[in-house]
Image (cartoon, rainbow, N blue to C red; front, side, top):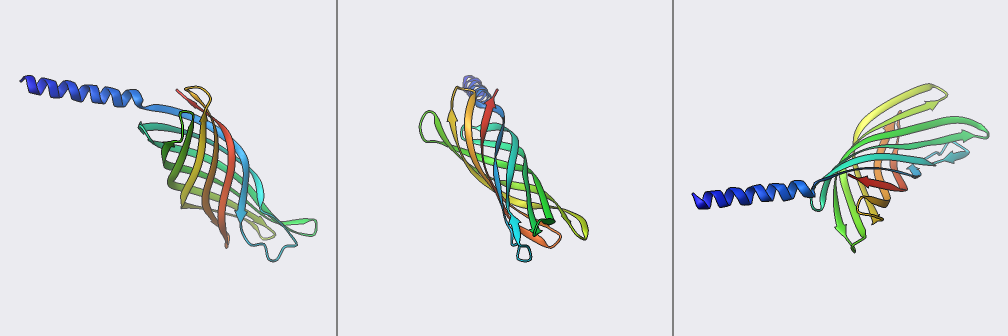
Length: 181
């Protein structure tokens, strides 16, 4: 009976320690995106735009977290002369796992892998076409702990898009802030 009670107490302490290390966090970043897409029939092709990301996560183990994010990659535009004839706007809802590894007490690296529901809207001379597809998502980042609950972060987010016969890869390089509670 004593062994059973000791085992139960040890199990309860292990669960308590695990729950105490669990931590939720939210954050946001801003930066720039790049669409890797060909624009052969256009005299001017703008493949970069502003990227915005909001995210939340929950640490489930000392180095592992589950995250959800919304990323607005902005758009790419093609034009002939000064007439804009092609625009693709892309957003993604992402669910991923994040693995953190410490470089030092204040610096942490992050590797992310998951799935993204990528939605794109194509506007051209023939009208508007929308498409949504599940794509692989990957990312890397770095975090600097300003305080125990506030981090300054940098991130590289990667996925793909397709809409109306156009497809390509997307990346966003951004910086922002993360708050833990």
